[in-house]
Amino acid sequence: MKKLLIKIKNQYLLDTSQGICHANQTLYNNKLISKKEYEVFRNYLDEHLIKGKTEFFNTRNQKTKYPRYVWKKGEIEPRLRWLDQRIKTLKQ
Image 1 (cartoon, rainbow, N blue to C red):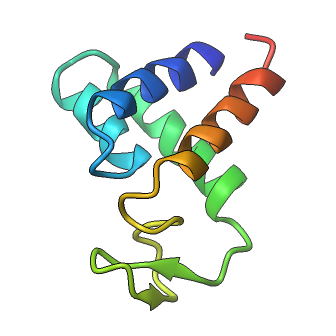
Image 2 (cartoon, rainbow, N blue to C red; image 1 turned 45 degrees about the horizontal axis):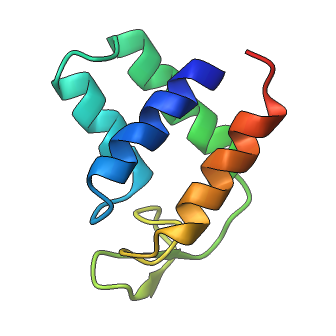
């Protein structure tokens, strides 16, 4: 999981205009990760980031109850901080 999160972070840094889910999708579309890895990350997000949240943002940075963006679109630091914290806590 740690290696996958590092790949996601590196891809996200190439295009910070979207969210980290987009980075996961880009890696999968470019065949840089398998479908299983893609799904593992989606499930990891559901369990460690989305579960229990009741407020999200849509593409216009308006609050919504439907998961689209956890942080406002364009906010880079919270995404990097979350990825770095998860990477740091995982052993492999």
